[in-house]
Image 1 (cartoon, rainbow, N blue to C red):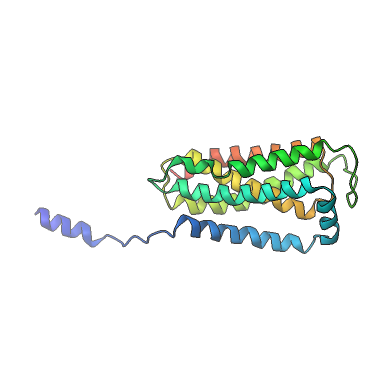
Image 2 (cartoon, rainbow, N blue to C red):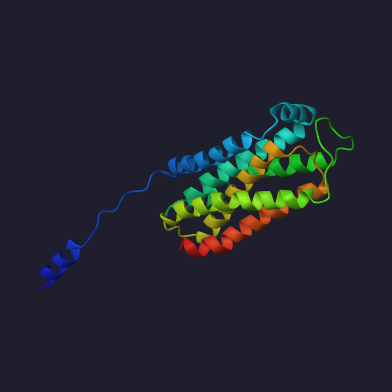
Amino acid sequence: MSDALIARLAGDLQPIHRLAAPWTRAALWLCAALWLAGILALFTDFTALSHRLMAAPDMGLAAIGAVLTGMLAAVAAFMTSVPGRSAWWAALPAPALVLWLAASGAGCLRTDAIGWTKPEGAMHPMACLYFIVLVSAPLAGLLVWQIMRACPLRPALTASLAGLASAGTAAALLTLIHPFDATATDLTAHFVAVGLVVVGVRLLGATRVT
């Protein structure tokens, strides 16, 4: 009887498709970010952007830090979503995050305005906040959907990394259409938006990846 029961249960089993390697899945997610970058590039004044970056190297370093933070946090999110992988993968984006924060803070210390920038409007910081949050939303949704399939054992940590990856990428994309110099209010809005995204994805995504 037990053999018949086992045979009946085994008859309904479906084959399990093995997930691609974390690096591969991270690369696919980054392709979506590149697609968004391509759209924003249509509205980018690359002449003005290049002049701004040459006049203020800290802006270029901040952009590089944001790009690397998004890329490495995405890799870390996929790595920590795989059972058996070390939680130390979460430290992967830390150096890039430090570069991003340090370079952004250095820009606020500049006393002379640089060329090829525009005066900051009163509502500009809020526009930056909305941009980062709204652009992060689809990126975070796609990333969480990919992570759900791996059933991570540390969902809160993995979801936090997903939020950081999405927010860092959105902040990097903002550079393409951000013709303003760094200010304390602008920088505060950027990182408030990043914090909101990370916390939001941690709270919402953590329950979905369990």
